[in-house]
Amino acid sequence: MRGTGESLELIQNEAAEYRLEGLVLMIEGTGRDKTDGKTVLQALGIISYDDEAGTYHMRAYNDGRYLETVVKLAEDGRGMMWGFKLGEIKTSSVLRMGENGDWTERHEITISSQPPRSFMELRVSPQR
Image 1 (tube, one colour):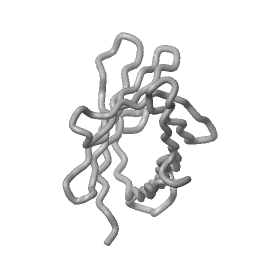
Image 2 (tube, rainbow, N blue to C red):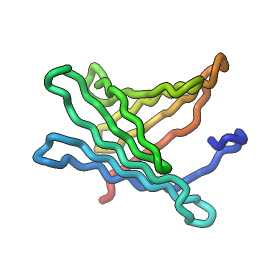
Image 3 (spheres, rainbow, N blue to C red):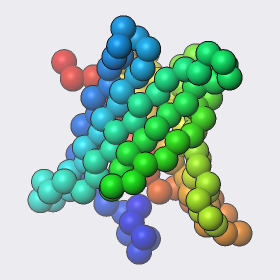
């Protein structure tokens, strides 16, 4: 969902792999406009576990910026949740794993006292 309220459909590629013998999970995504193939989204997330705090942390990069946030695992172990707050903007994201290595992501945004609204949904299938 763009700032103007119009939606944009992308062809999104996600590469997810454990690095450093499983100490970190790196997820890199590139979204291309479905109509002209131009890159409109690039993001990189690195998730690691903090032994001392007993929590997972993610550092995510996008558009020349980065954020750090806590990642919570779903109780069934088949997903995770994260979000951040920046001024009057608050986001909430949920990733759910499927049975075949596929996953879905749903991202919501809340601005000031407005109700939450969807701003991005992804469906990712393994490349075979």
